[in-house]
Length: 328
Image (spheres, helix red, strand yellow):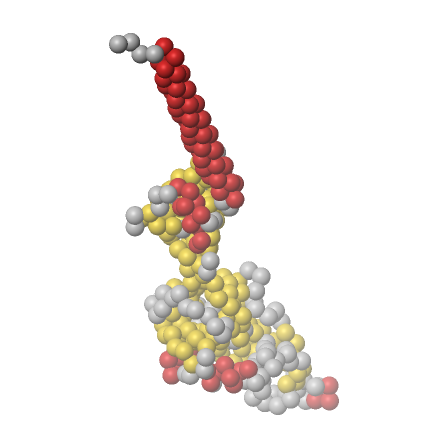
């Protein structure tokens, strides 16, 4: 028996309405899904772009890092003092710091005017080859370079700190036996003590060879033979080698260089570990990448590395870059 035409028509209309509604909901869902996925993708790209832009970098530059200290120095020189055979006026025949051979006339000693008729001028010659100095600090003959190990550097510096430093050159001597000049043997390496600045953290030990600089152009090396800590300061004792120019002053201020590293210089904050490998993260228009480096040396907050070329932009906040890369 055939159904009622009106009832069948209503059923068909309902089915069409349901299909149309389902199709509409499905379309809307797909549109919302597509929009959501697009927004998520664009948001992720925008986040990555913003993170990429705020990642700070420093340009890798080739250079040298030096581990340096300020220090006061006390030199034990091989000295020969020449004394006056009589009173008189001192007339130098050579200049301070001149090198002279044995027998070279260094000073002429003229008698005082009231004794000129009874005395004559005398020339005082060098008893040995070396460097002439007309200045005295009172320690001549008291400090023997060969006995350097027996001295307490703290006591020596404290004693010398109480003095005014070098004496002025004498214009005359008033009695027999008064020192006139001294000859410093420049063929014998001086022994010396260094008093390092308070708060110094040492990066050297006994047996090391230190570079020394002083004045405008003075350079030399020191072989460290002893190292002690006394009174809150470090004292290093050793032998002064290859000094140019040869020092004639007992007290000097030195710049001490214990280490020198050459390579690409970067902040230590740029170093990062990737699977136990030390490296840095570099930044370029193509993105971020990890580069393995070899650490040559560290001085303070700076590091010298090998493995990257100068001019590369190195990330200074690698943790932030690691978040973006998601692999370190």
